[in-house]
Length: 444
Figure 1: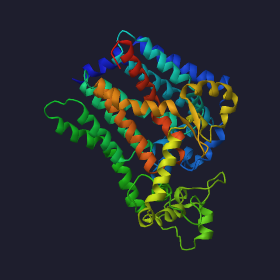
Figure 2: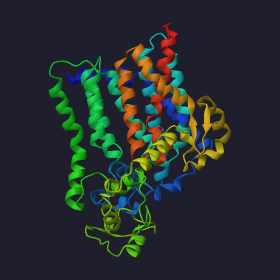
Figure 3: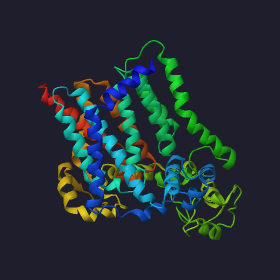
Figure 4: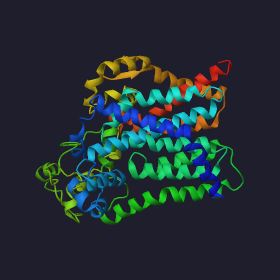
C-alpha cells in the first residue's frame, strides 16, 4: 500500500537526522548569501530572455503562461507567484534557491549513507562541503535555473537509491522528478526523459510485470510536457517546449546565423521585413517590448524569426565545425562553475573561491577556460570503479550524468560552466563512493 511508502518518507527522509540537516544547510546558505554580500544579482531577473513580462506575470499569470512559447512554463510560473505575492521576487528567489540547495545537500547525505554504513560521517562531510562550495553559494543568489535544476536531478538520484527497498516510493520520485525537469528546462526534453526511464528499468533488477509499469511511468511522466507541446502546436505551429530551439541548435552546431544570432524583436522588424507576426494572440506574445522597456523575446516576431531557421542546423551542417564546438563545449562543461560569466557577486569571496578551487586542480587553457582536472580524472575513473564494485545505483547515476554532459556538449554547451551545476552534486557522490570503497578496506 502507498501508506507504507509515505510512512517511510516520514520515518526516514523527515526524521530528526535529515530534518535537522536540511534546516542547518538552509540556514548556512541563507545566512552566507546575505552575510557575504552575494545578494547583488537582482537586476538579472528582469533581463533574462526566458522570462515573460514581469508585470503581466503578476497581474494576468494564466494568460501569460498560456501564451508563453520561449520556454517551458514552470520557471515563469514560479516568477509569477513571487511577483503576485510582493515586490521582492529576488529575495523570494534566494529563499527558494537555498531550499533547493539544502534539499540537494540532504540528498547527498542520504545517498552516501546508503552505501557507507559504518562511516556515516562521510555523508555529512560531502554534503556539507557541497553546501558551502563557492558555486552553491553563488548560484543560490542567482535568480535562475541552476539551483532549481539540481534539486530536480536530486529527485532522480533519490529514485535510484530508494528502489531496492521501496519500489512505489522510488517510482513516485522518478515520475515527479521527470515531470518537474521537463516543465522547468527545455534541455530536458522527452527524449532525455525516456533515456532516464530506460536507465531505471534496465540497470536495476526488475520484477515480473515491469514492462507494464514502465509504460505507466512513461505515460504519467510525459503527459504534462506533451500537453505543452500540443499547446504550442495549436497556438504557434511548432512542436516543442521552446521556440528558441532552431537557433539554439544551429549555434550549437557552429553554424552562423545572420545577421545576428540573438536580435531583439525590434531589430527583426527593421532588418527582416519578410518576418510577420502571424501568431500573435495577446500583448504577451505580440508586443516587441516588455512594459519595463526591455526586449520581449516571447514576441511573435521572435517566434517567426526563429522558425524561419528551423531547418538551418540540418541544411548547413558541417562535421568539422561541429566537432570543434563539441570540444569547446566539453572544455567549458568541466570548467569552474563559480566562474560563470553572470556570477559577478563572486568578487566578495574571490579569495575563498581560489582556496576552494585548488582541490579541483584547475588548469587554464588557451580559450580562457579553467578546467577542473580532478573532475575529469574522476569521470574517467568511474567506469573502472563501477566494474570493480558493481553498484547498480551508482551506475544509474553515472548514466544520468553522461546523458546530461553529452546532450549539452552536442547542442547548446556555450554555457557549460552553468549547466554542469545541474549535476555537480553527483561528483560529490562519486568521490564519496570511492572513499567508501577505501574505508571498507577493499583493494582498489
